[in-house]
Image (cartoon, rainbow, N blue to C red):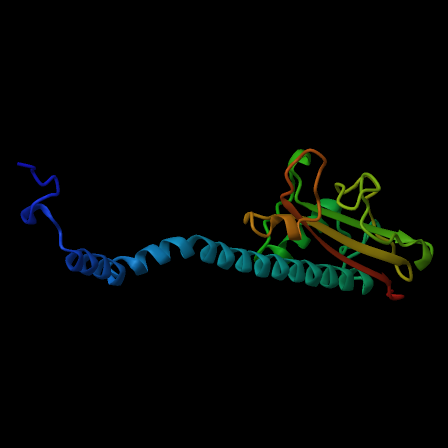
Length: 210
């Protein structure tokens, strides 16, 4: 007699039952929302943090510009003077402290900083003509994103009727990787870019105050 090698009815899974199991599996949605949230949450929150950081950085730069305008106006009107033997005379350290009080709402600013990790740079000088006023950001090389060159900065504002500039630069560290390559404008060779250089400038002629 020949035996039937095929499995018996008790061991065979009917095709309709297998199809029903697969159909229920395809329709099952338990945990789908959690899986989708897990996939989308990281890029979503990264985009949110990047948007917030860009907004804060630009708001900080506006605050820096307002401080330059305010300090420049006080120089222009004689409310702040230098080396004139008046009660309104301010030293470089005093001017910096006063400037910091204008921006410390959002920007970290201290009277003295470590030169190796300096954040705020101020340049306050007088010039013979407006044509001599420096233009652009001074950099250590001709490269577009080279580091700031502060070697020519000084604190020597003039008296009545003189032409002056107030320039402020601040290194704002960008924390979010997503936007760092796009808004950083200081990128030292061989180092990862991290700083957005805020810039504010005011050029003016002092009033002929008494």
